[in-house]
Amino acid sequence: MTTRVYVDGQEGTTGLRIHEYLALRGDIEVLKIDPDKRKDPVERARLLNAADVAFLCLPDAASREAAAMVTNSHTCLIDASTAHRTASGWVFGLPELAPDQRQMLRQSKRIANPGCHATAFILLLRPLVDAGLVPADALVTATSITGYSGGGKKMIEQYQAGGDPALDSPRPYGLTLSHKHLPEMVAHTGLRTAPVFMPIVANFYKGLAVSVPLHLQELPGMVTGHQLHDALSARYAQERFVRVMPLSDPSTLEQGFFDVQACNDTNRVDIFVFANERQAVLMARLDNLGKGASGAAVQAMNVHLGKDEGLGL
Ligand SMILES: NC(=O)C1=CN([C@@H]2O[C@H](COP(=O)(O)OP(=O)(O)OC[C@H]3O[C@@H](n4cnc5c(N)ncnc54)[C@H](OP(=O)(O)O)[C@@H]3O)[C@@H](O)[C@H]2O)C=CC1
Ligand SMILES: CC(=O)N[C@@H](CCC(=O)OP(=O)(O)O)C(=O)O
Image (tube, rainbow, N blue to C red; front, side):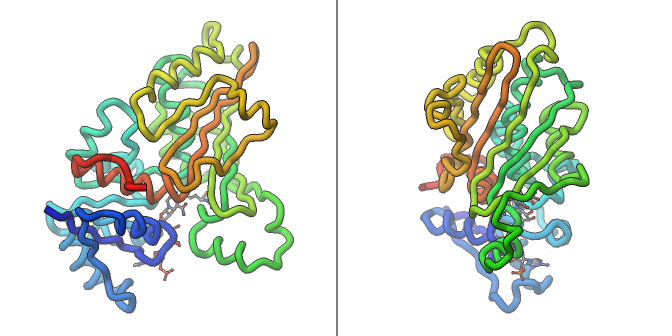
């Protein structure tokens, strides 16, 4: 039996990439909206209600509007926006979050997929908070380096137009210290306090790496880099899309520089612990359009439908 899928926001960065994944599948019938009607509420409502699964690849306000248009109990919504990530009644679309997450995704018709920075941050911290190695009341900081496609169509156009020398160098942002991913970072790690979070966008298309520095002496007991690494390795041992790299990854240290783009065109997250006796830096890298957005959305659909989680890449 084929699954009928509609992508609301089909012309956007996330929507287009989801279509590329769906095109590889024989078990999916894609419901397309006439391009002239793509913002027509009547036509959108018709297709949203006709779909078994509908992806919302829209700005937050339009996602809330789309969710309200679904009047049947059958359609499963998978929202890529920030609108519902901590909302009650919605399950967080990160299968690797906790042992019972897949079961919750199977049962729910409302799935809110994580933000790209948040995916990396949560996958680093959640197992360590659960294991008591990082206490829930720890005060944590995080930096993220991201490609410009994370900013959607407008930012992509701005970078690709060229001619603005300010865009040549990396640009820190989120300097109001209220980035939109902070609520989900708190809600899904178990941390009580939001991290000080500084994202940096740079002049490359895609790829993202979040870094979390830790002073080991500030953690309870005598936590070592080995323990942090062991806890992450144990949690993700059975996860096909999360790879925990060797402690203080020798090949990265040999190169001397971290490659932010090495997960591009995959649905993978690579996790690193670099450590000495006093300090550690946790790092997670992913493709912001893959595991950070469209790949994750298709994976969540596969989990919901009880299908193989692979994306057919
Ligand atoms: N890019 C990324 O790395 C990630 C993005 N996300 C989230 O996914 C969502 C989509 O992001 P992204 O694809 O980057 O954004 P884009 O700006 O690339 O695309 C958004 C699309 O939504 C369309 N749209 C806007 N309003 C409406 C409406 N009322 N009805 C129907 N369509 C509408 C836009 O149309 P038009 O073409 O006319 O502008 C556009 O095609 C956002 O909430 C974003 O935050 C999540 C994770 C990562
Ligand atoms: C470079 C850039 O601007 N990136 C976006 C994040 C993209 C993402 O994950 O987005 P959503 O939360 O919108 O789903 C940002 O930091 O706001």
